[in-house]
Image 1 (cartoon, rainbow, N blue to C red):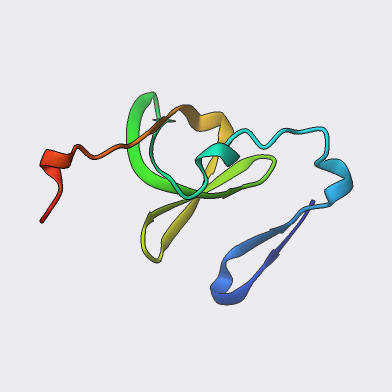
Image 2 (image 1 turned 180 degrees about the horizontal axis):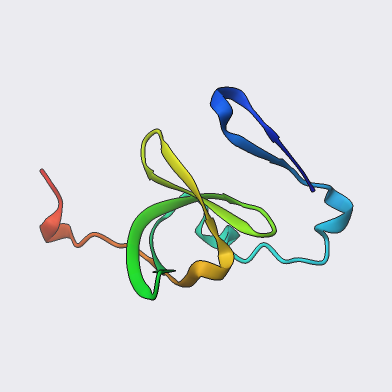
Length: 92
């Protein structure tokens, strides 16, 4: 796995496919769905409403809102739950 700086200084990871076949894509069922990740940060459990965009061997790329994406280390994710908005709570 090679890392290099991409456009706007964003870290880009180049995966070598031959080494990724032994790892299952654990988060792929949630791609594009609204979810809440329970993330461990400094001893606290933080719920993060987001949408899962992609995953690599070590990270999950999430979109917090349009244009705001970040990578979260898989070992920090404690749980994933689909986020469903009740019909009564939607904006009309």
